[in-house]
Length: 406
Image (cartoon, rainbow, N blue to C red):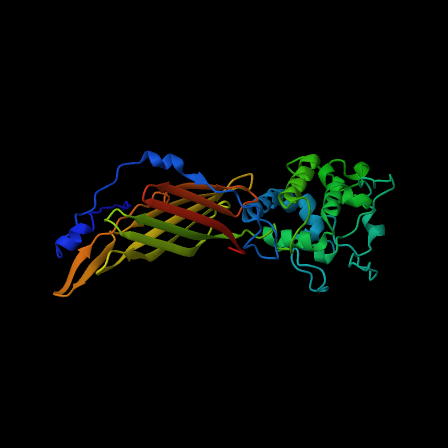
């Protein structure tokens, strides 16, 4: 990495000897003034976040990770089979060509095919309870103590052929609110208690006839599953906020960077250098990691030179910014930044009555704030650093923007 370097000779030497070369830059020594770098007040705003998801990007990542923690349960046969994974109307594994409304399944019914009935509930549930109850008569009771009834799940709740994002969006789309979601995970909101039956692991089968079948519930306890659901809700602020993608789709990260430098007087009276760089950079996820992002941005920084009359000066330097972001378990975003730069180049032109003189210029470079790490709390989108010493000022502002999707 190229370290920014600086040099300066008094501008009065330019007036005395046009054409003399400026001294080459040398590496600066670390300055104790670095201890004066102070972060600005954290901005608790929702600026730059889209209306479809009011969560800061850190909380979005936290929510997605929280939902992924539930996927092993959703994929377990005790849940998956009831959400389309078993087709009770077919004799062998495969799709059911006789009924397009019934999702294709990878598993046939272990008890053999079940006869069809045309009677369906308004939500698409097939009412075959009389035949199902012959075997599945050991369901966990309803909240009020009455008997639960086995039946197929509505087609629109199928998990078949869907990845974690699609299932998450489906859950948000079909769930009224956070209370209803946790209620379903607890005991199906007091209705037919499939959830508790799933964690019993006995398929609701008649114990006298099928007691020899090994119980096989999900790998975690029912209470732990409820806690995972609550963790997902909590990551979204306690409610199922935003559209169906909010808290389900892993966001990318885009940073807005604004960096300024001001140097006065080091080249002599009236000498001033000001430059600014403002850009946005997309940070895609790093490989298969869910919480790491990285990107880079190159630019040519124009340095505005003010020098005493009768001279004018122009200068510029090429820079490469590298930025990395990581979202921690609390939803905070940690941004590491580094900036490599070529030597600044420029020239001074002085016009006198007797003629014009021109020479190469090496303007100063600092970049004190261009390295290190910034921490953005879960509800923060902007941080500003400032550095000052006599004759030199520098600011760096970074905003975290949301970019939906990967």
